[in-house]
Image (cartoon, rainbow, N blue to C red; front, side, top):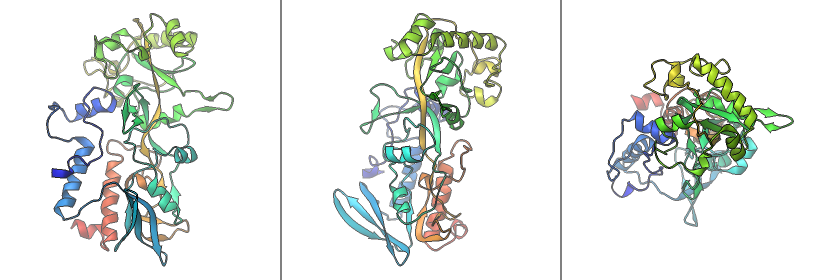
Length: 396
């Protein structure tokens, strides 16, 4: 990549066995020298696309923020840019494609639009809704604004990126045996090993008298879990940080965390009885192959990959809440990424792709690549349409 190698926005390559980083490492079977010249996962995708631009003679401009769409005779014809405090205008011959990501890093937009609490974006801190605001200023129709790519998160004290607190997607720790998630009453409220996007519903359960009953929540686990698997980058045998709230018994754990100790004790008693029979009658954890996918691969049964008693002190509890990989709402588009006006007509010259547009899957999460797949498809179609061609003709 030459001089461009350091200009791709990405988290540091992290193989620390924390959250989604550990999952990525497992997927790509990574064993990489820390000093190696490499990029992986989404960074590699962006690097490939950037190289194609450079090979085609295109020179991207970095630190150049689009702040306003320029219209003439009802058509979008360019963009006003702020680069290093200097403003200039860029004329667009074919059209402007909004590909600025979502608005998960803008607290005002999050509060105004999302359906419930969202306590931490998993994305780098650059998606601040610029494309959304520019499109709204020209009457764009909006859709799916209450939704996000929801995910349960943990926040490690002192962990930051770009000067902002970093949130980590968490799946291994909640899927493996001998851990559960409880609310402040000490009650379970979801299938901990389930599909992460759908977990927002239980976290967003609102009681008219007591607010959000399941926010905050904690992952509760025992000494055997920590000894077998480690937890959030703390390897088996390593010193246990105080924010894990190590406790000799359930009352002490309740005193340290604020979890109702009596409620937690009842939950653990019921949990341990049920998992002895390899079942979870409350939420069905362990009843599907999906539930065990990130569980204990050495377990002899499907249910055993994710079910296990919590009965060996010391006990631990780590705060967990709901965050997002990105937002799903934005300007409504047609099949070629053309942005639609509130009247239903196309806004000439304006396109959108990726998380900057209204998500085509609505509230649902279709599976791995649920953001990248549509972004690639609609980016391709929008580019072709802006060039005055059909995507089918460009594809050949």
